Amino acid sequence: MASLQIINRRIRSVKNTRQITKAMQMVAASKLRRAQTAATAPQAYTQAARQLLRNLGAQTVAATHPLFAVRPVKRALTIIVAGDRGMAGGYNSNIVRALGRHIKETPAEHMVIAIGKRAALSVARAKDVNGIASFDVDVPDIAGTVALPVLEKATELYEAGEVDAVHVISTDFVSTVTQKVSVRQLLPVLPPDEPGAATESTMEPSAEELIDIAVRRVLEAEVLQAILESRASEEASRMLAMMNASDNAGDIIGDLTLVYNNARQSKITQEISEISAGAEAIAKS
Image 1: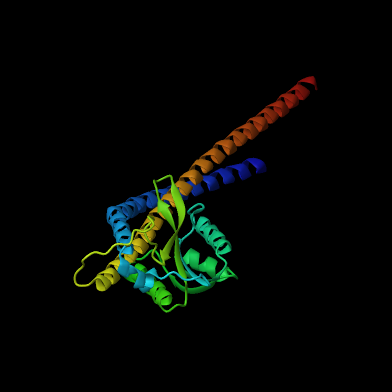
Image 2: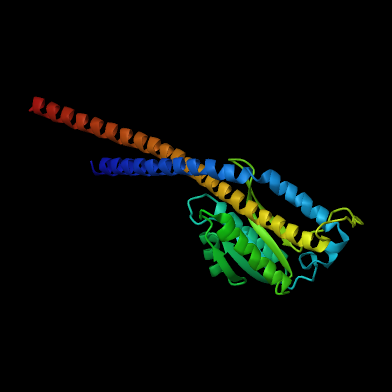
């Protein structure tokens, strides 16, 4: 009887766990719809901004802009975007692994700006990086409280010569079931791919002023898009992780129910055998 009680308690425990994971799956699905809309809405603008940045980089005057200056990389700054919470499968750990690979591939002194509590915790535990700032990612105004301060800090360090390169490590939202970790160079601004593409165009109010304003706006859009897509990827990963947990709980419940039924049937058979043996003994006596 004790074994049947243990199995029954285990079944109830797994059923309670499945209820929790199903609830978390529904919450993540609801958040995913909003995060996906927020991430996909500005994609066309971000693509156009990247093309504008390439066109501006082709201007002759861009060579004198401080954000286009290329220097030997002795000190590097990396902006990583993860989540504030766990229970999202491999979402946070993939970002941390990508940071580790990036550090190994870039021999330099590394500084990190962490966006997301999980990223900040990982950076705090790391021995080969210097965490200089951290931000929560689950905030209402991402642009004003996260993207702009992060970009201002990065450009300030780059223009002052305290860092020689700035990269962003984030998760691209491809679809609900596919998310891809990417490493993008933010600074220095990359010139056009075509060699010899430097051009001269007439701009108002002036080429220098226009390029400075446009470059900073484009970089802002780049950072904001990375954060928005990372948030959508996080909710998608959490929804899939909770769905898999619910499915696994269902399988465990099925297996435990089969074990419980077999144990109960064996016990019933044993009791019947004992009753039959007792009745036979009484009849012989």
